[in-house]
Amino acid sequence: MASERSVNIQIRGVYQALNRDYLRSGYHRGHLAPVYLANSQSCADATFTLTNAAPQDSNFNSVSWWSVERRLAAYLESKCHWQPVYIVTGVVPGTQYINYRVNVPSHFWTAFCCLDQNNRCSESGGVIGTNDNNSNIREMSVADLEAELGNLYGTTFQLFQ
Image (tube, rainbow, N blue to C red; front, side, top):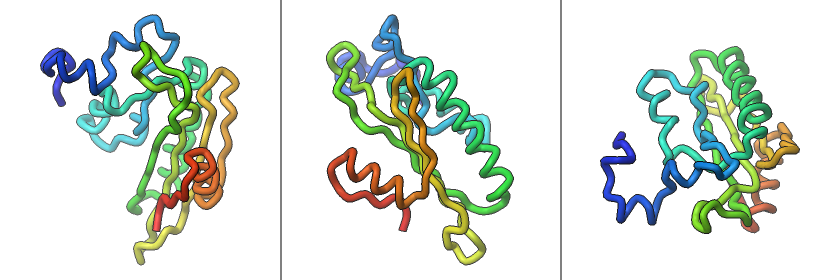
């Protein structure tokens, strides 16, 4: 991982968010891949990079989505222990921007699939939340999450085969 200072300012300030974009913006640097699911220190460190972040409402990040990430980590530990797990996270682009260039997502979402000994999905689920102070979070099946994302993105969506 390269520090922000080590990358050419002419490139990084145009194509990637910077720490200064978040200053006094009212948004946190919200994790996409949560630190709770990291299985090593280097993986945990990588979750704190700007390439793993998107603007997140402070209440949504610190209270609501944080709780979802903790519960998901505990669930996966208890239900999928020792099984391979696929986790997909993402955001839905919103209509607001920080500094006229960093998109503030309208939603954050996560889906997971635990594989059994035959490499078939044995446990799966999804969660989606509105990136605002109200933090409307819904847990659902992967199929329902795919349908919801299809509506939000305006296209068909398939997370796992």
